[in-house]
Amino acid sequence: MSIFIVSIVLFSITFPSGAKIRKGFVKMCRDVIAQWLVIATFVLIFAYVTRYITLYSEQMILLWLLLTPMAQIAALQLLKCISPKLIQWQGPPQNTLIVGLNEQGILLADNLKEDYYQRINVLGFFEDRSPARLDQDADYPVLGSLNELSTYLRLHTVHKLYIALPMSSHPRILKMLDDLKDTTTSIYFVPDIFVTDLIQGRVSEVNGIPVVSVCDTPFTGMDGFIKRTADVLFSLFVLILISPILLVIAIGIKLSSPGAIIFKQRRYGLDGQEILVYKFRSMTVTEDGGKVTQATKNDQRITPFGAFLRKTSLDELPQFINVLQGRMSVVGPRPHAVAHNEEYRKLIKGYMVRHKVKPGITGWAQVNGFRGETDTLEKMEQRVHYDLEYLRNWSPRLDMLIVAKTVWLTAVGQDSAY
Image 1: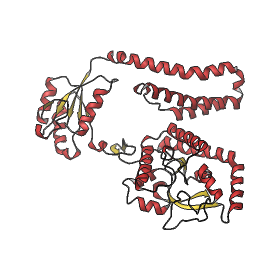
Image 2: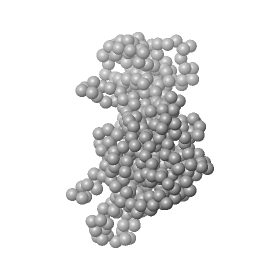
Image 3: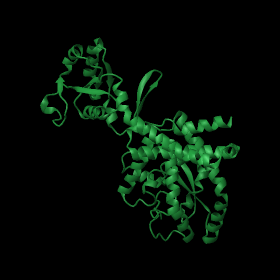
Image 4: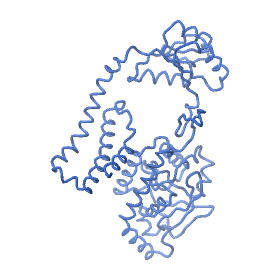
């Protein structure tokens, strides 16, 4: 039973793995090694706890740890070298047409042309607009107008047809689809909505009706279960591990300055709902009103002991309790004071989208240098940029990378937090 549970955990973390052969050699090696470190750590911990580790010699375990990622990298590199030949065996290239010589149509054609792992031959475009209105830099021929498309398909072998017309061309699209009912060509619609900045954009169904996600949380279904389970297990482990440190810090705060040990401040959480966030008090004030002044360098309100706590991020440790409560996550966009939220949501486009997930103790913005004071609008815009990038690209591996980078940056010291 224990082996089964470990297998499920490893599968949840590593699946889906992604097409590593599409990446450069250095990035491929980095991904393989990072994934192997996670798998090996879980397996070794399990083997140690269950005493299975005594069945193998230290030399054998060391060889296993070293040779496995090397063998995987060699196999991927071999596959990368022979894949063009394997793809050739799939048959002749698939002839492809694109309707709509516009930004998204050209982007699609370029991607198809540069994809070495698909045998796609882009024949050209069909477009109703006159040559004067078209993109003159496009390196693709215009084979005719939309009225000539059905005739072209009857006379030529075309395997795939992509419709990249804007959604405003709805009547033309319907008429064209009606004309194409007599063809065996596979037809795909590329709505121009995918050119916009989507958050977790994907196509799904609601009782058989197709819908397109424009802005959604990444934590739905099994992903949500994985995220919450990891949060609970990790925060429990950390709180048990650091309980003596919490006691020492509490005593240090009480002895160094008058006031409460825990500072509670209202922040915005999931879906923009107000939550109470816990921190060790590091200042002589506990602002939580309509106006909150951010801490700055050499801020006189910061106590000497509080400066140490803020520099080492130890003041954030009580937020693991918030994680257990379900108000926060270990990794996610950092929560801002309510007053700051109300200010920046009016100044930064897409600011409130960061609240599609629970706020985190650490985040993608923080490990990329945007931690602490945001004294300019540009700094806050960059922080929001990284927060939204996290929402678009979330995976369990990304969370582990952020946690690892946070531990490293805390260990070496970071000067951006005051």
